[in-house]
Amino acid sequence: MLPASGRVHENKRETDHNLPRIYYEHPNGQLWLGDSLKWLASLKPESLDLIFADPPYNIGKADWDEFKTPDDYIEWSVRWIEAASVALKPTGSLYICGFSEILADLRRPAARFFAGCKWLVWYYKNKANLGMSWGRSHESIIHFRKSKAFRLNVDDIRIPYGEHTLKYPVHPQAESSQYGGGGNANGKKKSHDHWTPHPGGAKPKDVLEIPVTSNGMKEKTPHPTQKPEELLRRIILSSSRENDLIADPFAGSGTTLVAAEQLKRRWIGCDLNQEYCSWAVLRLERIPQRSVGKWIEFDRLAAKRRESIR
Figure 1 (tube, rainbow, N blue to C red):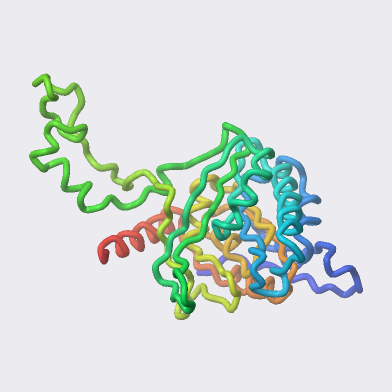
Figure 2: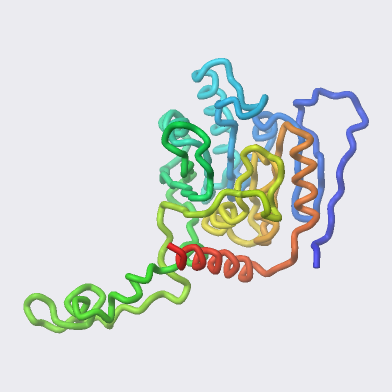
């Protein structure tokens, strides 16, 4: 069963193509076509619960990914990050995805708009190394928090325990450890019970192991830097609740919007490329209906399968 469909807006007037306009309307969100910085600046202050951004990396990946100098790129990045911080609620978060060497240049100038941040790593093993140097197997994600009251839903993003962790509590060595119920070094009995695993899995870590999108996956589009839906579901689950408003100023082929729709969030996004927007619309129109719990279980099973073949 598919959700209610939306409507594509035809642009029948000659206008500045960089001036944002609504490209697609859906019962749960909007996709805009135009300049992302102008779009962010137009948003109501403190209206967003979560922003995910996968901005241009300044590596010449496409015509939208080229800046004259590194300083130009940093200056432009700080401008859109400041606009994003204004649009976030006090409990909101901004996640920025990119190569570590690029995000490292942005972290300090951007930090002044937030109360804190956490550096995450997205690790993948299924990307080919076509060069003659160290193969890239990760990207970084900076989690900026608008205030100390930021939201983090640990139970929704728990990960599978390793086999060693599950077996250790019953091992003889564990009796005198924090896991066991035996005596301590002085022979005194511990006051707490034996450790038991949480039914939802272990607490999340700052390394997210999720494969990149690849040919053969239903979600794959021709977009050169498409992110996997599983990655966005993890981020959206971590820092928002159902019916919260999720935004992506560089929506691309729509992964953030698709994941938000899957998880019963409201969403808005913008992109400068009309072809990318058309791909996003196709994906949004074809999302199968599942409960949020089913999507969480879907990703946990995928993670368990990956853990089992280590």
